[in-house]
Length: 459
Image 1 (cartoon, rainbow, N blue to C red):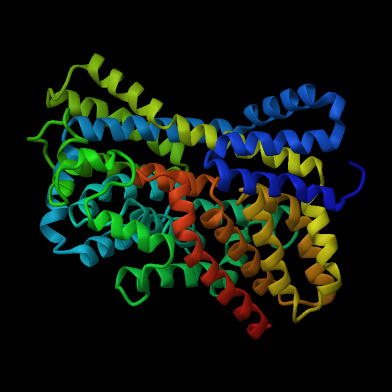
Image 2: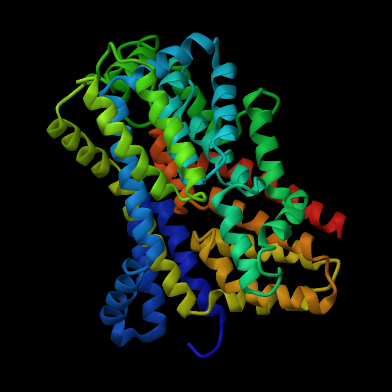
C-alpha cells in the first residue's frame, strides 16, 4: 500500500474476534494474515502469503526463538526425567505453607530471574506449577503471576535482553550517543509506569489485597474444587483432595522419585550464569548449560546418553505449540506492516501530540499497536524513528516518552494473547493459552488505565 488507511485495522479486528470465538490462536492469526493479504492484492494471496512466511522463517529472530524455546524444552525434559524438578518441588513444598506463600515464592522467583522474559516465563512456570497445584491454585493464577513478573520485570532492570535491545534502538535512531544507549534507557526507568504498576498489581493479588476478578475468580473456584485447568478432565479427579498429589506425581510418573535437588539447581544456576556471561544471550547460555549438564548427568549414570537424546527430542516437541503460535504472530505482523498499520495509528493521533499529551498518547497508541500485532519489540523498531523525532520537535520530555514507549511494550507483551511472552508463560505454567489471556486481561487493563492517567499527570 502506498498510504496508510483505516483498512489496516481490519486484520487485527478479524484476529481478535476469531480468537475469542474459536479459541484457536494459530488459526485466528493465519486467517487474519490472509484477510490482510486480500486487502493488499486479492489475486496474489497465495504468492504473497508464501513470500511473507518465507521472509519470517528467514528472520534471525525467529530462528533464535525456535532454537531457544526448543532447547529450553529439551533442558526441562532432562530436569523432569532425572527427578531434579520433582526434588525441587518437594523442597519448595516444605517452604510453602499455603496458597499465599506459594504464590509469593513464584513472585520472588520471577523477580530473581530478571535476565530475559523467555527464560523467566519458562523457568518459573515449570518450576512452581506443582507447588501451586498442591494448594489448589489455578494454573491461570500461576500463569498471571509468571507473566506479570516476566516482561514488566525485565523492562525495569537494565541488565536484561530488553535493555540491550531498546538501548541499541535508541543509539541507532540518534536518541542516544554511541555507547550511551543503556544510560539513556536507565533515565527512563522511573517513568516506565505500566511495568511498575503491573508488578505492584500482581503483588497485591498474591497477598490477597486485590481479589480474583471475573474469569480469574471462576478459575480459582474450579481449582479449589479440584478441577485442573488443562492436563486432566474433571471426571479424572476422584476427589478435590487428590488433585494436588495427582498434579505432582502423575505428571512426573516417569521421573526418578529419588532425584536429587542439585540435579535441578546446578543446570538452572549455570543457565542464568552463562546467560549473563555471554552478554545476556540466552541461546549461548543454553548451549553452554547443556554442554555441561549432559556430562554432569552422565557421570552420575542417571541415564544412558541415547535416552538423554530421546528425552531432549520429546522436550523440543513439547514446545512446538508455542513456537507455532509465535511464527504465526510474526507472519501476521509482517502483513500488518505491509498495510502500514503503525503509520496509520500514529498519523491518526498526531493532532493530539502536544508536549503535555504526547507521553500519554504515545503510550495509548503503542499499547494498541503492540496488543493488536502481538509484537513487543518489532513494532518499536518501526515506530521509534517516527515517534522520537516528533517528541524532540514538540519539546517533550524525552525520558518520559521513552518510558511511555517501554510501558506500552510491556503491556503488549503481557496482555496480547498471542505475544511470545504470553504464549511461553502459559506453556511453562501448563495453562490453556486463551484461558490465561482472558483471566489476566482485567488486571493488565487496570494497570494500563492507571499508567495512562499517570503519564497525563506527570507531563
